[in-house]
Image (cartoon, rainbow, N blue to C red; front, side, top):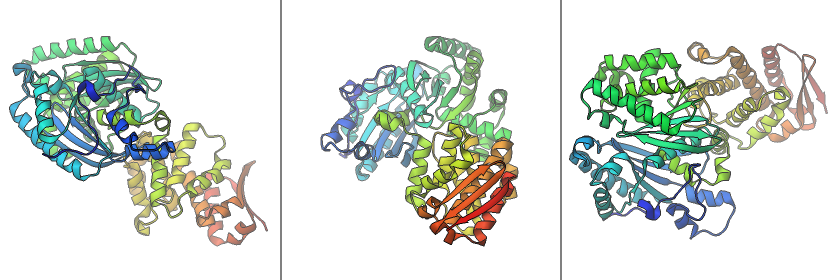
Length: 538
């Protein structure tokens, strides 16, 4: 019998109890935390966090799928070391039988055997295994958990509906630290709603609105009435406004993918996608009229997943009708990421996921790690009137300005644009991604390739597009002038006054003056519509 290294959760024995704000009771830390801290001395928090969050395994036994995710959670914006999903359908037919689907149970056990064996070879710092609605509701759910533990060594914690909602909301906080609104998590057998305000999770509730549950109501009229009643009850139970509605779960991601397909949206990154409300409602009405096989071929989404989408489309339409949210945003982060977020100390949660990811990329990929901070400081005279939200993007761009230096020069601009706009990072929306992409293209190239400009410029406001060009050319100047040597920047300065941009070079920086610097400076001045002056001060 194979047993996983690290810790697991099982029922109330090892599960961490949290309040409605999603905070951990310091006297009741998760098993994963307690176990590792017993073997660690009291060290700097970064070292403790590094040891505790390195390679955390999460097994999510859902009503429709069973998934293993291994996080490299050392950064505030974690990387996915491993990710595997098996569609099992544990909850299929549960409404009629009250028991887990026999075929799904066999598939789930097989997947868990494999996941247990894989985890044992991955040197994980800990393992968390959670089961949700199907196992929670089935009369043989506890017996299934006992069988899993006996055969694999994995201890499944059965999450309550409220806990499932809370964890999904905490996953949204991992991606959007300032998220405000309602989080809707669609699973296989249930749908959860959580109120997210002030960085805390408040009211939570659950309803039997998953596609496997709805499939057990074959009569269309009865199903429609059931949806209306359950959505009304759920919204009333949570009783909160929805300045934003964050959609979590594979079914909602599939809906978003279809909306992108139907509208011809070019940036097919699901996290942070914000479809216009009317457009999304039109897509929800369009989905049932389409051939599933054709949609699968066009989107790359499995037919098994897409077959559930027409069933849940009316649920989202009804939810939108009742909530009238200010905006809708797709979250790629949910329950599994929420489990990771719950492990993080408060100091780590408060860090900016975008900047942490950018620092991580600079540290591992840039020619001179640390130069990005000096470049940002050097460029501040050009950005002194910018908002805090603009400055964080400028800082991120400076950290990322050199991480693609190994790419072939002929394709470096295109490569950096694709890499940054599609990066698996949180803390930014799609327009922010496009801004960073255009800034980095301008850092490497005098003009943006036409194919990129035509395809992606419509996704960003013209003023921001112009600002990205200025930022890119200013980063290009700083990099060219200094050769990524911080000391050169320290002996030079930019000053903007009365429509004149002055570059002053002192000491060692004077020795770095030349035609290349003059050309980069003039390109920046021209783009800003200013006059320019270079001053040498030996």
